[in-house]
Length: 138
Image (cartoon, rainbow, N blue to C red):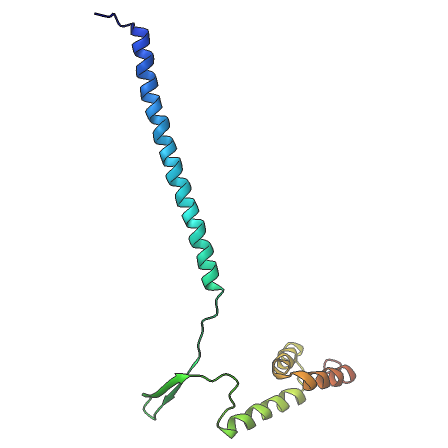
């Protein structure tokens, strides 16, 4: 029969107990690291998906009661079918370029709306005209 040294037994018990705690800590560190890595991958995927443009405008034709008759994707670069819409937009553009208001803030917002529709030669013409005839000077 071998005599066991109580100090050696205590040391072995101590090592077994804290070795198990160290192993468990390593396992949880690995699980936590995997969770953080997965979260980063998913976050990057969500950012990538959010940067994709997937909006498709649709034209919905309704009857006099408000029920949908026809639904189809809007054609890009199409022209409005109704001539009244074109006339109204042109009249609003001309009215916006010619109006003069006493309120500077309202005048600035009106000119911003006009410039939102002006492209190419029209924008160049407006720039030259408003440089020569400043609407903010009384």
